[in-house]
Amino acid sequence: IEAMRLARVEELEREEAEALRVMKREAEERKAAEKLAQEAEEVRRLQRQREAGQRAKQAGSVRSVCLNIASSPAFDPFILILICVSSIALAIDSPYLEHDGKLGLMLNVVDKISVV
Image 1 (cartoon, helix red, strand yellow):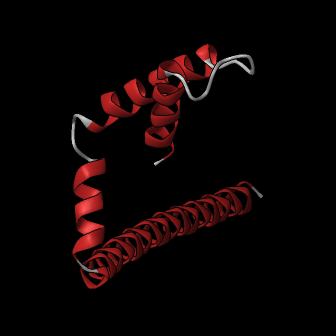
Image 2 (cartoon, rainbow, N blue to C red):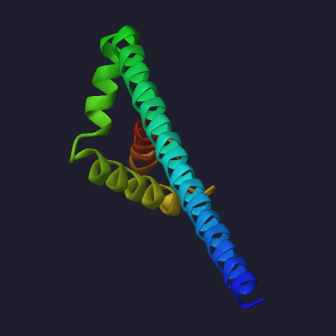
Image 3 (tube, rainbow, N blue to C red):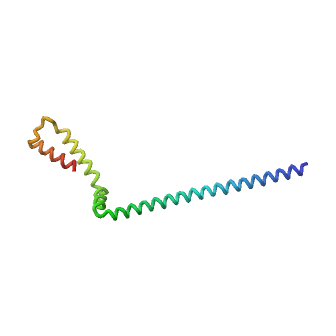
C-alpha cells in the first residue's frame, strides 16, 4: 500500500510539473503575442506618419509654409498678443462711440486685423 501511495504521489508530482511547464509555456506565448501586437502597432503608427508626410509633400508649398509659421517659436506669443489686443478693442468699443472718429476707425482696423 505504501508503494502505491508513493507511486501515486510521484505521478501527481509529475502531473503538477507538467501542468506548470504548460502554464509557463502559455505565459511565454502570451508575452510573445503581446510583443508582436505592440510591434505591429508601432509599424502601423510609423506607416501612418510616413503617409502623412507624403501627403504633406503632395499638398505643396502652401501647407509647408503654414506648418513652418505655426511651428515657429514666435507664433504662440504673437497669437496671444493679438488676442489681448482684440480683447482690449472689444472692451473699448461702445454703441455710443463715434465710428467715424479717430478711435472708431482705429478699432475698426484692429477688428479687421484680428479677424484676418
